[in-house]
Image (cartoon, rainbow, N blue to C red):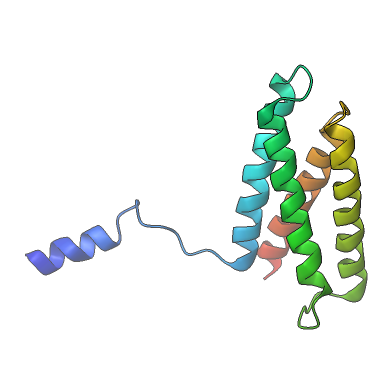
Length: 124
């Protein structure tokens, strides 16, 4: 009985699902975008929650830019260049958000990335 119970526990719905790299990237984008959206909706000016969400978003994009700049990255060169451009836009626009600009452009960019990640995972 112990072996059966252990097997059932291992496959319960509480177990972590196996995720692909794209699935993990999607999940990170979803979390950060949700936090950006939530903080921007509640914010009357710059709040600590908005500043933290903007900072985390900026870090995510910096990591993406570093990843696509690596020699081992297998994405097409044009897509890699677009990601670097978006990372640079995100970096500069984040400063504007911290000075009172709307977070909507970053939310839209992240949502487009999530859509692309979802589309690519369906193709794979």
